[in-house]
Length: 190
Image 1: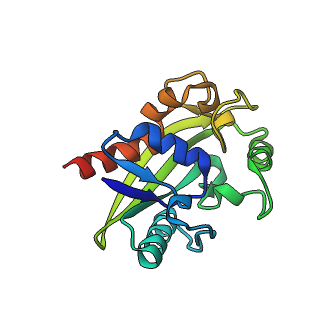
Image 2: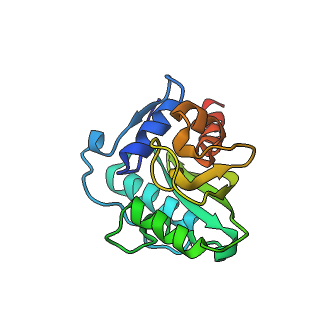
Image 3: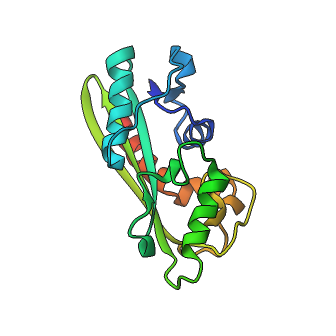
């Protein structure tokens, strides 16, 4: 089976390819000659994932899936949430986003958070949604060099290390994206 993963994020593509079985070949946007930025204009993670998948299906005709992920911090009222990738502004990077989170949490006792991923799948025009969630908390400072995004400050429940201190395989087994992908794989294999 060939399916397009509608993302321009090379880190996500690499993670997904590790999580999917060999019989599912994941094509990148470049593989289908899609070089434009995918739209993400909705106020929810679910709507953005569907918007990206629909864009690829409607404009390129490929069966595909897209994800959207948000870091939701309890004491910040669920921020950054749907704005996780651009929390510190449209021209920001992951370090800027992390610094903003750490600044806003300075002095906060409640550092509980969760990562939530929504995968929107479109096969032959039929849409399905899969959700993965990983509970945890925000570290006081960055730790680790692996991963991407907020990985250096997110410690999953039951662990003493951040996602950025884990191998890709270790993270994939417990992460929000890993859990959503497991549901996607179960559906595709059935």
